[in-house]
Image 1 (spheres, rainbow, N blue to C red):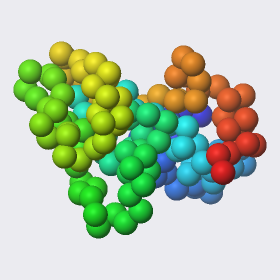
Image 2: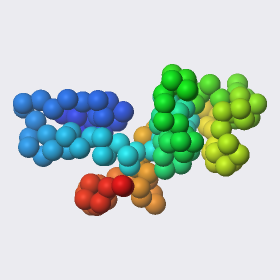
Image 3: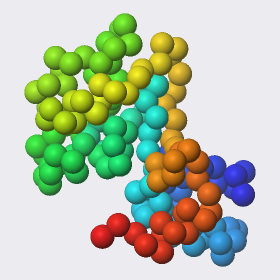
Image 4: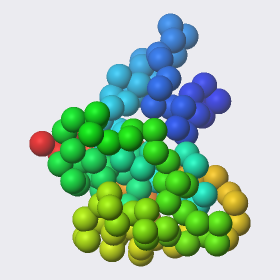
Length: 144
């Protein structure tokens, strides 16, 4: 299955093809619901949207801060914009944009000293590993 549609950031923009099995078509039909379980592990921060991706909590910063109008934020900002050349969080850049609670969450995230790409993981399990059982439960009982 992985060869047909790899499970990475491209999976969530993949369109079903006629050659895909019924099961794959069903999975792709529920991409948006699956996306709610995805979390990013920060390494270099270059792949992660600062406002719209879930990377410092179980929801995006925009949702945590109740930003309902996208024009109020710069949706092109990447997490890497807030990482210094010494691989530390740039608190001076973060403070004007997020609240105290969000800043504390961000500062608990360790940044890799090696310039490696960010990783997608399943945020709804203790070990951040996706299983079909967890995915099924998530689809059956989605968040309100």
